[in-house]
Image 1 (cartoon, rainbow, N blue to C red):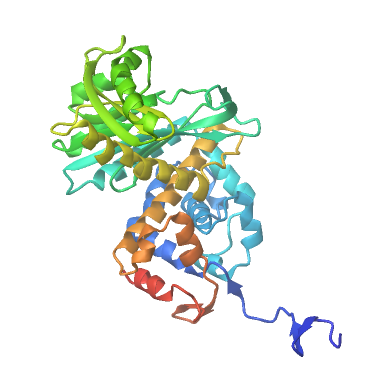
Image 2: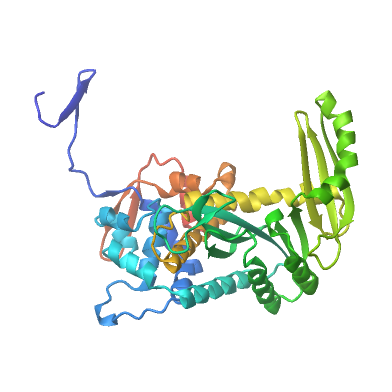
Length: 432
């Protein structure tokens, strides 16, 4: 090798390496996050709910600065607080975040500074933002679901959950089934049942909505873990519509037995697929009144699949309620929870304190809401293939853009490669 920096030879050409290029960032598109925050100010609003009791004469980074850093870096894929140590010289990050990044200890102190009262204040502020966003709408669908977050340390209120068979936290997520917005994120102890606290929380959500929008039609959608008498009483008191899954029991098995035998005889024996619905009144022992219930008896060709649900949606038959409304919670709620957990890192609740981990869930939820705004912006463009992008696709195709930054006395230029595949889409989003 003639020179020390020769890597290898290929077709009579030497491949060399040096570090003489300009400062290049892999996160040049972060300017899009800054522009969104300047328009919607979600980070600013949430940070104002957190009391900063530090000695301000010694403060270098405000809580808004720290929260912005945490959210923006998570949007770029950096889920850990100590990632700032490896990114401290990134020219784009330093420009967008107005100087040196907050260190990992500073970020950790911020997360651990919150207590129960702070979290409640943040949640009320979060709910107020959602209610304000409902202007002009006359109907909302509220999707309620829970998800597990396995824990691997000595986190407070990390407990064993027999259903999931692990030590964990239990996250309760209330979504808007039409827009995908998180109405409220709630962290619960690991041994919580799916429906723990949810009726009292939902009651506060309903009252907040009706205080500003008294004529709003509200429809609640959830799986069988959320079916209980307290909910049905709330639905009666607040005139709610709903479609809720119903766990099977011996009474329900007897109600569908005749239809099940017929489907088995006519279709399962022929290895044919078939769906049959029945409707009936049913009252569990704890329910205050009977409810209109439905069952789907289905032959899949290889076995039986029987599902029960309860609903008071008017002028719709069982098939319309099930396929036209209930099963859509898979896309509207379950897939959104997957994005929150796996793409916005709500499964990274590794602080010791429970309220600090609750704060991490809120930070992940802010990250999700920022991406939701980008999704809405993308749907306004002509790039139809991008309309179905999930958060990981947006991060990979749009936000992870290599480029340089040039500063003059009055201007800052973000320079991205001419070969950037989605430059037209990014340009359209940048000037929306």
